[in-house]
Image (cartoon, rainbow, N blue to C red; front, side, top):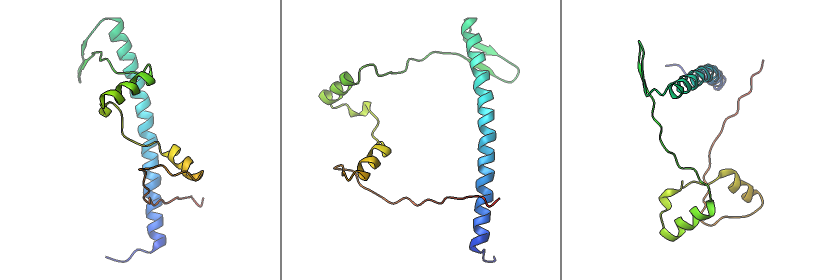
Length: 125
């Protein structure tokens, strides 16, 4: 196998990058169409009080599920602190808030740093 120059590798990378972006844009348009059709189907099924629709290619079932929604964070935090049930919360840092503090010279106890390498690419045309 022949050696690829750095410039050839950069061109191959850029071609793959552009192709991926084009495919993502195409997928995003398909998703918009999908969501519009889903909304119309859901609306009609609710309006007609249907829980199942059979079609030539599929069966669509409708059901409603209750999802949690925070209404009073102070009460939630108080509950979590008093019970120790931290599994009710996501365990992740808000990167931008941490980075803002780092830029202001503030270190947060328990927060480490690790390097992440990036490439940026700009077309010549």
